[in-house]
Length: 390
Image 1 (cartoon, one colour):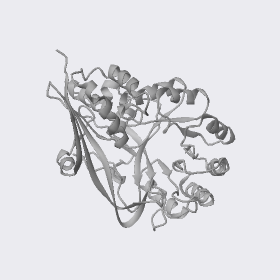
Image 2 (spheres, one colour):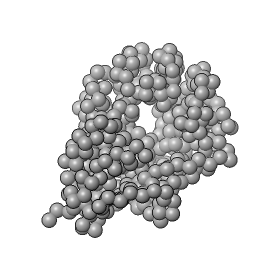
Image 3 (cartoon, one colour):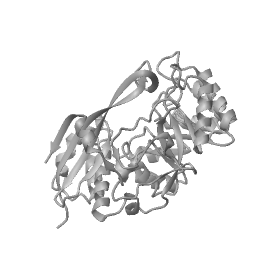
Image 4 (cartoon, helix red, strand yellow):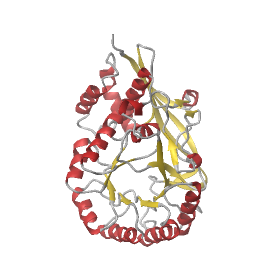
């Protein structure tokens, strides 16, 4: 008899980040000495009748709300039939952004790896087990941290000394005054002048720039400093094919898009319409490991590289199984405060700034499934909500 799903549990929990606050609008995390920011995540477990549990910690409230609409469909189903479930749930969530698929699909892949006693990358087809890694910064602040072009250059140099082969800038935001394009341009030049001959450099405005002119000015500075990529500059949210094709035609620096383009078909259209040079994938955002790998294969067919968004064990398993990727994103990092990742991992799995080796790489977990063990005691102690489906 094939295995069957017997119960799904979603636990919402909170954790604190010290010396971290937000910008004026409350959307970007920034260094703020003495402040504490509370974040919320979800821990998902899928129980089966063979005593093996698929697990994943991540996601957000909109995703959790979507899981509530389709969890009952999965009860009694074979957890190994991921492709069928992906297709059915995709159809069921057709009115929404479908981000609820991600945590569930990752948990099903974790089950499959444990069921077959192999890491997920072996089920996908292993290509590599060490991932070149770039340092991806917190957003800029005006609080004595990453508060100037020189501070960014100093931190880039620190990351170079730690062994990072790449460095990505997240600049200022939160108010019209903070969005000083001249300061953004000065930061591009300061970092480029300091370490540009020794590191791949990137910038991600995170859709803060308000005009095509702003995006063009910063892009031309990236051209002068030979940046590796330029990511999501526009206030459109990163989704306009026409706008990004126009920007791409005006610059030498490759642009990276599709982090905010939901769905496999719009993603494919974005590539087919020459609207980007690099593309994004994220197991949480893009329909789990199933959806993220579909993106990677599509990009490969078009001759493009796919760069995975954010750190995490699911991202590591995916990147290990594809050829057309350059980097793993270690985010968010800062010289004066800790990474934003939750303290939910037992063992030696780490997303700390110091977790790379001398070659600037991080390992791919090699235990069954995602290859990590979660600290369920911490999750339970910090639980603030729970849903059980059976």
